[in-house]
Length: 76
Image 1: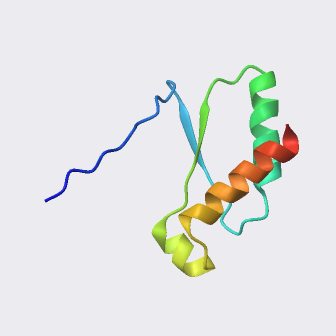
Image 2 (image 1 turned 180 degrees about the vertical axis):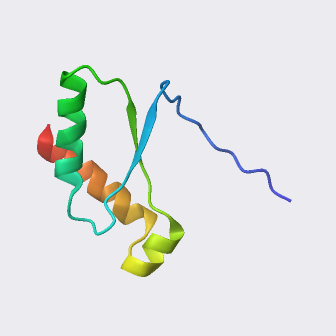
């Protein structure tokens, strides 16, 4: 049995699970996080999508990551 090596990133006190089910709202979701932070909210957005959702929509984890990266880059 091989041992998996995962590097864990620290999470803040509050995390907020989010993900764009259909892959079209990444910019709006990131903009909302920015606005909430400007208003004093303290949380860490965690982008996720269940395997069931990936199967239903026809996406994969890499496409969710690509969308998140694109949204962050688009909003600076």
